[in-house]
Image 1 (tube, rainbow, N blue to C red):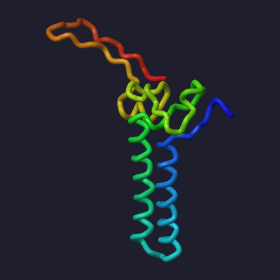
Image 2 (image 1 turned 180 degrees about the vertical axis):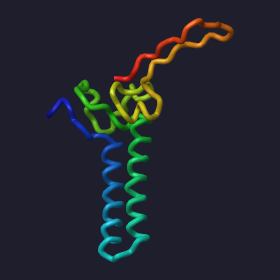
Image 3 (image 1 turned 180 degrees about the horizontal axis):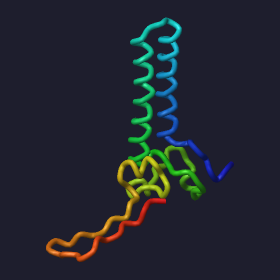
Image 4 (image 1 turned 60 degrees about the vertical axis):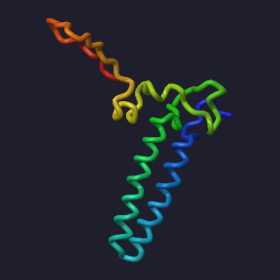
Length: 119
């Protein structure tokens, strides 16, 4: 068994299932020349991306790369999702994984504090 296990997560499989239904509905819309079915199918595909993203952020999607053997299972939640995954676009879009400067009430700084850029 590979150490990488790309896409073997609840988020991945759920997103693929919803996107498959959406493309089937869009395909029926194309074959039947039905604009509402085509638009509905494309909307379902867009929803699949949002559902996958939400599941990833709640810990049901894991980052790419090598994981410990205990994290290989499909039903194992990712404990690091709350803090954001390094180099993950979805986490960056949600504002996770960014270093921020601590703000102390009443403190005045002469120069701005640099925030490290995401990888």
